[in-house]
Length: 141
Image 1 (spheres, rainbow, N blue to C red):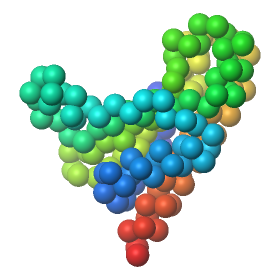
Image 2 (image 1 turned 30 degrees about the horizontal axis):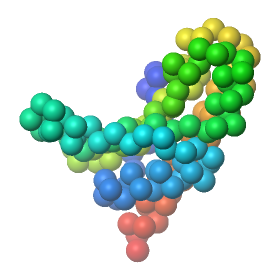
Image 3 (image 1 turned 120 degrees about the vertical axis):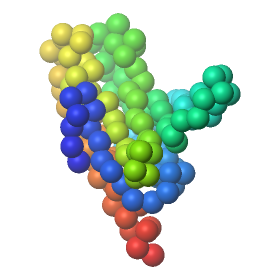
Image 4 (image 1 turned 90 degrees about the vertical axis):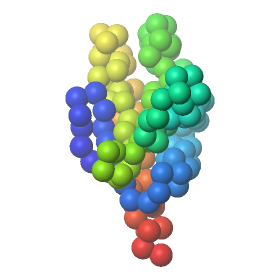
């Protein structure tokens, strides 16, 4: 797992659809609902006629943590839901990446959000590790 400035990410084994399904299931296990699922490849093909790699944006939200954050900072809703992306690289591997909540809530400059950002960050790290473990186990079968 590595951080890229504003995301935390992990390359994973398996096929793309399996990676998306597993990511959604593991997010749910960590208390996140997926409020939206944007198929960027299909959208760009339909709207622009352009080809693009497989790329999905999953809008993830943990209701309890969102409530706590909105209570501390009403404008936080402009930064929600937290996005998790699954995409295919130019080399054909698959990456699962999540916004780094510390970077996201840092925009608000409200120290009351620090503990929430840490909680979401820790959960996202567990999601990425679990997705990788589950897909690796599935590919070994």
